[in-house]
Image (cartoon, rainbow, N blue to C red; front, side, top):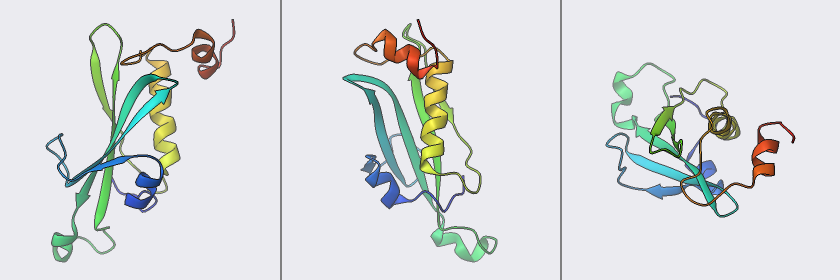
Length: 130
C-alpha cells in the first residue's frame, strides 16, 4: 500500500476523478477512473487514499503520510461482478497498476458494463489473431 511514485497530482493528470467522501467506506479520499474502449465502459479503477499524517509520531521513521490502495471492479457479463485489490510494492508506478488491471480484464474474459468491444480489438488486446 506504500508508493511514493503515485500521488494525487499523477492520479488527476491521468484522468482520475477525486471524491472527498469515498463510497467504499475505506480511506480518506477516493480517486476513480472509468476505463473505456470506444464508448464501452470496460471496468473501474479506484485508488483509496489513506492519510496517516496525524499518526506520524506513532509510525516507523520513513513511513509516508499518504498511501494508496488500488482496486478495480470487473463484470463477466452474466451478473457476476468482482473486485480485485493490488498490493503496491516500492517502485510501482501508476502505469504498472493500470497494466495489471488491464491484464486481469482480458485474462478473466470480462465483459464491458455497457457497449460492445469490437472482436478484432478484443483479440488484439489479448495478443491473438483470427
